[in-house]
Image 1 (cartoon, one colour):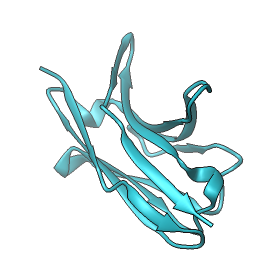
Image 2: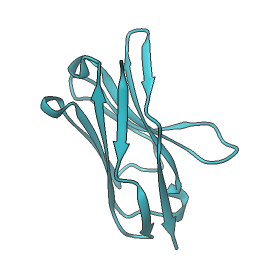
Image 3: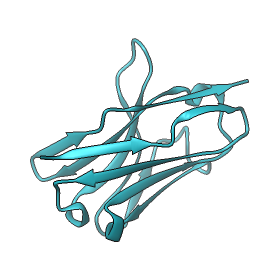
Length: 115
């Protein structure tokens, strides 16, 4: 059974940092592209960042220079380091794994940034 378990969300003030973690179970983690998406009420889920199995990364323009995505294949874990947080970063953040036609989502973790 595939599970993506996120942790690390919470409340932060503008300018502070948070790190999200996602541990994957039941997949060949090292062969998956791992990503973080976010969603706010009434809006579509949007890509924040992803990292391919060979290490290439991709970031949304809104987070470039502030967020960093990392993966540790030995721990089946992907991280999202979020620095210089802004109120606009407030959202539910979802972990995602994809490989070929397979696609899996975590349950989401809330990040709230106050001004």
